[in-house]
Image 1 (cartoon, rainbow, N blue to C red):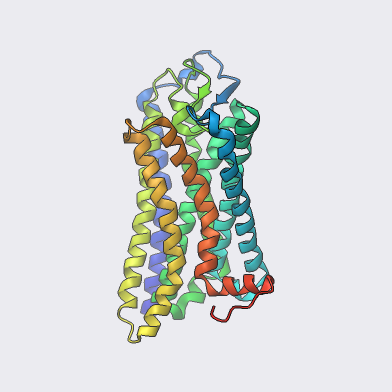
Image 2 (cartoon, one colour):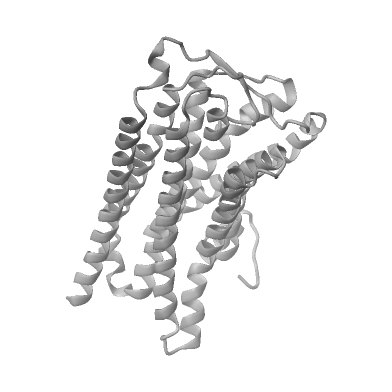
Length: 353
């Protein structure tokens, strides 16, 4: 009974943290609007009808060649994540919370490159650089929202591993399919709420410097640099939300795995320790794959003013494209149930799985 109460309190803490994040973001938004006055775009000047995405400035001569690895990454990402979804859908033994969260991650990893790759390839192949203003805002919102969904899903998966290893007898009770659906809804709502102010804050600006975006997709800070009004609210909101969401998710992930390690190293059997750690290996690998390039891209974009602009763009695309391709490979290699199912579907047998 005591253990059940502790776990219920843990779930309540998760819900409270999500609500607090949403409330804090909304309050920050209100304060910014109050401090910096009315939107400058309400002064009578209409927003631009379109922008020009320049792709990779300085590397125009090799953009056609760069499209080959980009297209390969996209195909591998779609193929790998579609295979992962098919295996989870057709294998009834995988209809568990861990794999349901993995399905959400796979769907996100399919949607992320789809948001930016088609336009990027059009720029590289046919110089189709123009993008409608509304389409640009939609693309920017979708990319940032999917990033928030991916981070939230990894946080939920850390909680799943925490319950499975530290409280295995209560696992099916605390993480029922209905609970997983609630987690998924909370992740989606959080992403929508924290990203929605970004395009709204852009609508208050006047874009009078240039229509040229030095990027392969509509990225928030790249658009802010084109504005000639007061961009302090945009810079402040983007910085605060990025730090708030990333630090909050990473703190919860590290706390979960700290508790997991403490439990694992107190297991009496060495075999049990290896088995418990093995179930976390794929998740830890995906966390490093996602957050390492993302953090480096964020820090270099904000503070690495001496870094060439083409490097910033490369890091931003690496952060969005490469993890989507690697995630299904990591889970396929580290998760025995998925690996066995894929090999059986391919008509292959492995002596040692």
